[in-house]
Amino acid sequence: MNWATTVFKNPRFLDFFRNLNENVLTFLNLYVQLAIMKIAVVGLQWGDEGKGKIVDYLGKNFDIDARFQGGTNAGHTVHFKGKKVIFHLIPCGLLNKNLIGVIGAGCVFDPTVFFNELENLSKFDPDISKRIKISKFCHLIMPYHILLDKIREETKQGIGTTKKGIGATYEDKYSRVGIRMGDLFNPELFKEKLRANISRKNVIFMEIYHTEPLSDSEIYDKYMEYAERLKPMIVDDTKFLSETVANNKNIIFEGAQGALLDISFGTYPYVTSSHTICGSASIGLGLPPFNVENVIGVTKAYTTRVGLGPFPTESDTELGENLRKVGQEFGSTTGRPRRCGPFDVSVVKYAARLNGVKEIILTKFDVLSSLDKIKIAVGYSNAKEFDPFIAGELSPVYEEISGFKKDISQIRNFDDLPPEAKEYIKLIEHYTGLRVKYISVGPEREAIIKK
Ligand code: GDP
Ligand code: IMO
Ligand code: MG
Image (tube, rainbow, N blue to C red):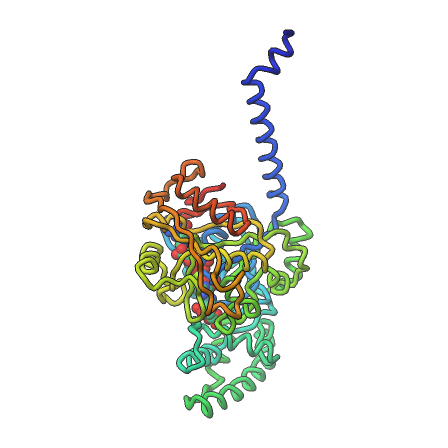
């Protein structure tokens, strides 16, 4: 045996090469991931999946965090230096000081909420407003929109909205009578549009809902004051973003709500009034679709929903209560208790298809530690797949595995998870056909496991 054969047949040498091979693959994988840095982060259930935590976690590697739809109905929670911060309108990655936040054309904007949020965030960064760009195209949520939303919610028409005026503002946008951010800077035109809108709305208030009419002068003064303060932040977002794309900047497209609340593909009419799937990122920011290079879906390790509407795996027994209690499932925007139940494979598969998602981030996995048995809905007895038209009639079929009954919130390596926890992840991957890329095990930024 010559020296070369001795060396090549040595198990240590072979191991070295095998590891090297794996390392090269990991490196290549990482390189591909790093090269794809225009990523949409979207919710794959009924909202509140933990998008806030994930955007904040990913934020350090990006330059821009752009919201493309929704408005103050969103509540994205971030835990930072022991403090809990809830973002409604301002992009939630901005505690990362490297990020510039964009509130895009597809959003609806309430200046009152915005300035409250800004004041709160100034505690973390007194200059934060210098890192915020607001689209001149986005529509303004006006006091009459909020009033309409509230009044309607008190009637039979109510669907359990957040009462932030979202639906009424999008209605005006698509009826082509809405007031846009850019209109604030032409006071005469603004006044004219405001008067026309208020006189139309007063007919509704007085004739249909028998409430007091609104006056335009107070609203005008208030919005003119806002205009002054907003002015330095207003941009043409389509131009700003196309320049950042040309300069190879990395962008997170921050989705709000979740796929099942999408105005077209969600559980209509129990949905929000915007498109919540990744296709909306292009429309909501005026960027071509191919600029959304990758999409990551965020899903809870179980399911929740706020407001009315079908929810096949909803549990009104001890299980649901336990999830609500341990997972602190109360709305970030309205404080309402969230409805809870097991993970629904078919819902996530449906949402992944709409978003072209191949990889998911599983959040709130630590919450399942409290359960003796973990149930997962692997299909329905009366349908092949999820279909929003029959969502109220679907009968889930469950598989059950042993719970892991161990605090996993301090674990940071996949290998250190208990076998039952690994089994649950494997089941989710098997049934959804999606790869679980990260597992979140606590609300804090660092409480995450890369798989
Ligand atoms: P979003 O709307 O998708 O951003 O989600 P919300 O912020 O409305 O709701 C998610 C809630 O779960 C927030 O209170 C987060 O702080 C919290 N959270 C996020 N990830 C985790 C996690 O992995 N474990 C636990 N226990 N809480 C989490
Ligand atoms: P984030 O971004 C959960 C729900 C409301 C209601 C329906 C319509 O935090 O995930 P709307 O006020 O939009 O007209 O209400 O949509 N909803 C949300 N549920 N998370 C949200 O946002 C939501 N935004 C709206 O509860 O059922
Ligand atoms: Mg939320």
